[in-house]
Image (tube, rainbow, N blue to C red):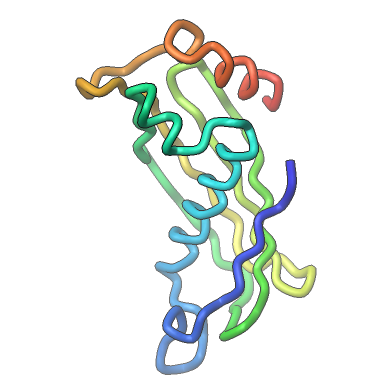
Length: 133
């Protein structure tokens, strides 16, 4: 899987010129959307299939600051997949140095908000995710 690149925008920095910590969660979401699209299941397709994938939990450890115009390279890895829940790991690097490490966990819900097993609901996505664990 390719790495996602985010260039820090000026509005994403605080008064000290440092990328505000809350933006890293947004960067993770951008990278997750790119990751799903690369698998052939962009969020638009998932929604057409009646599928949602909300965040169940998220955590982020900040290692180094980034600033305006820094390029953050985000590597997304599947660390756990049960068919109903998905856990992703993110390593965010700026200039080759780890700036943050994070984890997000998601479930899969149908349009009625009920949990679904991807194997039955979207077998192609299930296969793609199982191959990455």
